[in-house]
Length: 344
Image 1 (cartoon, rainbow, N blue to C red):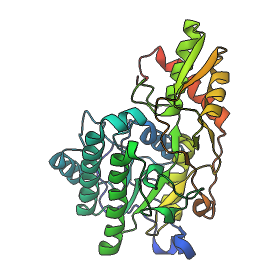
Image 2: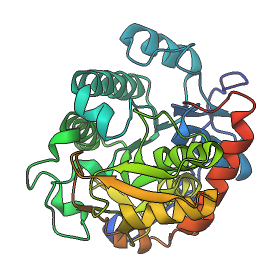
Image 3: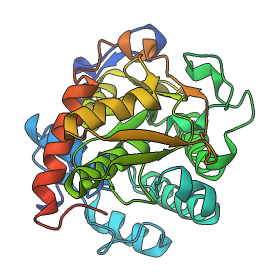
Image 4: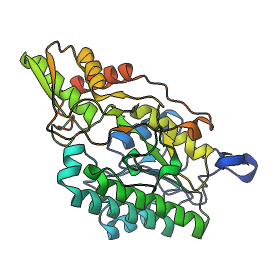
């Protein structure tokens, strides 16, 4: 973030600029000069939100990286809020990872995410943040929820065991936002994005999510002339993928058009198998060898398709198709490998 504190500036529009409609829909423009703290501004989601807000005319957007402010440290977070006084907060910071990282390090995924969320949400409440968006994850829903998954499925069944610790932390964040709304009347909201990918993703071979992991694996296999690539699982689970730039658009859309207790799904409304996903990635990367599957490794949730109708009713739909999005992401990956800025 940059610039000084702006006494008296309001992040939300005046009453004359706000109109309400059923199901939590509002039309509340944000002041483009208001201070916006994007927690996790260096990450996949946070950096995309910062880019989009800047394109839309916001002039005071960002936040310190984890090296400058460890959001797990409560005193440091409160001191930062007291000094900077943000008017709007997008809570995109989290410890994240793929199926192996979640399954083997559940303690960190639970503890770190709970501390990040509690510290930021408590500090935001203490210092009167007017508008806040908490970003959760589609993994909050039960493993065998009816498909496509509606927001009402939350807390109706058992979670996927390989990422239940992360899911519980995110559910706690949703409930804390709802508690603030009930007790303090603040217009804070929650959004639940589906599987995300895009520029700035984590391409680590063990800690990344499925799509960046496939991009790295096929890229390295092509360079090495490897005759085959072996992927985890059976390839049969179905997944929905959303480009992070689409999520960034949805964040601003929700901040200006939604005000209700319930979370809002953010997704494309379409899915495909992991095997089909791998075929798309292989074509984009240019890998022509064999693709095999190691069924001894876990598949995770069999299907996870979100119902985005609540967001669609607010006038938002995704724009970036999967093949286009993978091509954009792969181009970014190749370009940034040379600069050493890829997380791997």
